Structures are given as structure tokens and as C-alpha cells.
Image (cartoon, rainbow, N blue to C red; front, side, top):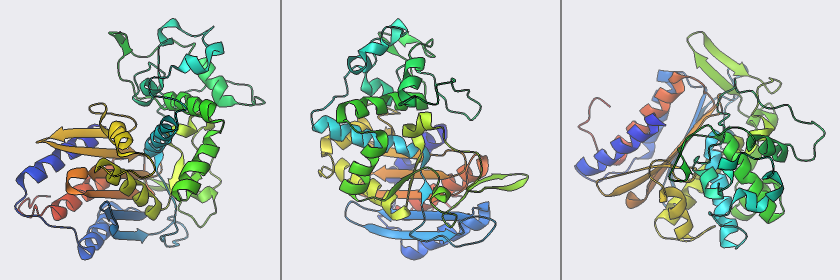
Length: 377
């Protein structure tokens, strides 16, 4: 979170001090992507630069996994991790526009039966509280978190999980009737349940109906190599080398927190999703209204509704970061410049890929805004 916030502030400084407007060219992007793979040892890397009308440039380099060396392509899926939270927020906004729910709808308004055994401090939590991680809900953000033992024969394990969650002691303090920020994947499970209740569709059906069918973005729930072994595999980069995660590997995102971060998209699909958001932030309606996009991205300072943001020198910026440990995904949007870019790689869970993504981010910004005199970047 701190790294992304620093980068957003740095981008603002670029805009404030740019000597002349420039635009990143195809050769520039190709060089950045190739150098990044060589410098940081990334198996594969997909980077796209867009404006609100088109994909300006896209580069996809590398291999599906470090074992068989099959090359990635435009048909390769990459896991987007917590960028999935933004997707859930857009679906929520769609249902709000359809008058099925609103950001202030109380969780217990939809699930009054769960209030009986719930901790009283949770009584007022809303859909928006869950999205902005101010509901006091336990996080479940690390692989070492222990999930409750639930009945495997249950018809709805996420519902049972929510029932368990609201009986636990809140993990953050309350001030002026609201919980303080605590990043929570489990909170997005509860938000997902609310959307399921008002739509009559499961989370999986919501993704299929709205993202796949209506928007037209191919989306898979789970890691890409579960589609087939010729899709990208996840990797962990460390001092001990590269660990490769095969389709048979036991590591996966627990079903209980799927809505928080278990989607995969192709680079062109994720670029399209970000482009739609950029267009909305610039005042144009598409899947949802411009007002809805602006609310999602800017209603709250720092961390809004599944999206990070910053404002410096009068410019607004949005950013999405997502990693479930073995992939890493980022998007940066600068509406005032009609500019956004996406970065996707099949490596995660360490400092190497974070440094790589940060390095790529600043190289793209430097080229885009002609920040040539910052020779140290």
C-alpha cells in the first residue's frame, strides 16, 4: 500500500514539473518490458498503455512457466489478485444503478437472522463500510491465517463464514460510530453476499453475467493454469531461486474469500476494464455512469471503494495493486491526462517483483511525460 501511494505522489510530481508533453511509443514500451524481464528475472510480463478511446501500446513477453518455456501470448490469462476488489465494486455500482441496493444498505438489513448472535458493534455496518475496510472485520490477508472449521456439506459456505465473522470481536477500534481502517479480504466476502442477496445470483454468476457477457471481458475464477497447463503458472522469486506452482500445487485462494481476489484476465481484457474506468473518470458513461466511477475511485481519500487514490497539485490519480502470492498485477489511471497503464506478471510474493513493477511504473511515467532529465530513474 505504501509503495503504491508513493508512486502515485511521484506521478503527480512528474505532471507538475514536466518540460513538454510526450507519449510513450511502441519502441519505448518494448525496451522497458524487455529490460525489466532481464533485470528482475520475471518469467512473463504484459504491459498495456491506454487512453479513453484505445489501447495505445501493448507488449507481452516471456514464458508460461520456468519449466516448459512455452511463450505467453495475447490469449494468456494472468491472475489479478486484489484488483478483483475493484471489479466487485463496479458490479455493486451496477446493482445500485438498478435500484437493488445502495452503498448505505446495512448488512443486517439483508441478513437479519445473523444479527441474533452477532457482536453488537457490527450492527450498523454497511455495504460501503465493507468495501472501504472500515467494518472491523478480521482480515484474512496472509496464508497463515486460520479459517474456521465449517460444515463442508453446507449449501453456502461463505454465508456460514459471514455468520462466524460477525460473532468475532472486531479487529479495529471505533471512532465517532465508525471503525478505523483494517484491510480485510473477509469483508469483501460479506459485501459479495449482499450483492448475491439482492441480485438473486451467486458471485460466480455475477461475474459471468456482467463482466463476461455484458462487458465482454473473458474472466476466469482461479489461477490461469487451472484452465489448462499451457496457461501461465505462478512463480515465487527468492534468493533461493524460482519456485514454480504447477496446476496440481495445493496452493490456491480459499473459496471463502474468492470475491476479494481470485480473478484472472487476459492482458487485453484487463486493459479494456481499466480503459472503461478511465473513460468514466473523464465524464463518459459506459457499463456504469461516470458518477459511479468517480464515486468508486474518489469517494474516500487514500483507499476508496476497492481502489487506492491520491491528489496532488490539483491532479487525481487512482491505482490498483493485486497479488495473491504467485502473480502481480497493477493499474495506474491519470484521468486529467487521459492516460492509464496496466502491468501483469506471473511472479509474486517477494520484493523482486514489487521492485520490478515499481521500476516499470516510473519508467513508463518518465517516458509518457518527457521527464528525461530524471536520469536516475
